[in-house]
Length: 125
Image 1 (cartoon, rainbow, N blue to C red):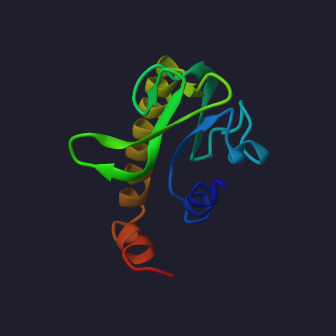
Image 2 (image 1 turned 30 degrees about the vertical axis):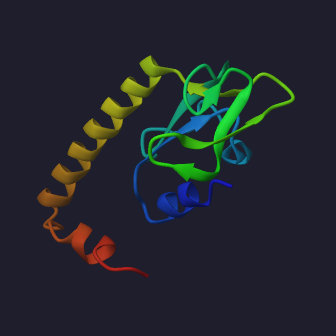
């Protein structure tokens, strides 16, 4: 239910995540993420699932799974759908996260905090 997103945010890591169709919608809304935020939301919209793991009106993810045949398919009541991210916005957010990371590294180096990452994120809690 989006717990890895919250854990990453709590640890101060940058997070690129979809908005729309996830349990994370409870705490990640479009427009969140300001100048000091390390949260990069990307809009996602419902779309028809027209490729694997969807085959016509079936979902093919159920055991048993075989190397050559794939997994067992089961018919769905409705047409299969999933959420697709806006790829243009995803690229923009990835670029912004990268640029922000470079700025952060520059700031931490200039403050003599070059070991900041290894001290805080090198070992588990």
